[in-house]
Length: 90
Image 1: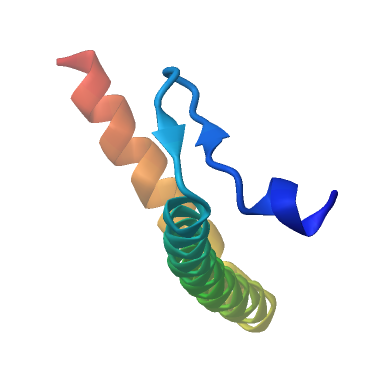
Image 2: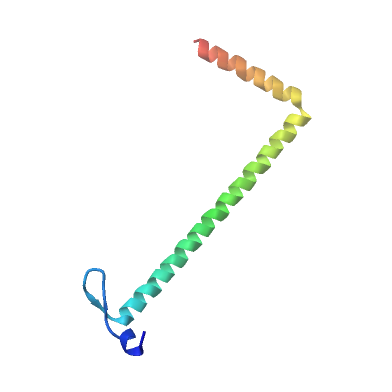
């Protein structure tokens, strides 16, 4: 592309003529918006990663508890079955 053709107004999507400076301004604005969007997505991914870590830690704690106190877990399950059975039989 020659230097002369770069300075010519461009035809927009709706047929309007746009100056190169307007197009550059639009490109810069789009870059800024894209950067903000990317930052927001990265933050959400970070939050999701933290929640996943916390859930894994809690699951590990529950497994450890069940391994250390199996009778407590079995007893709690039996109580839950009895309570649920009585609620459903009403």
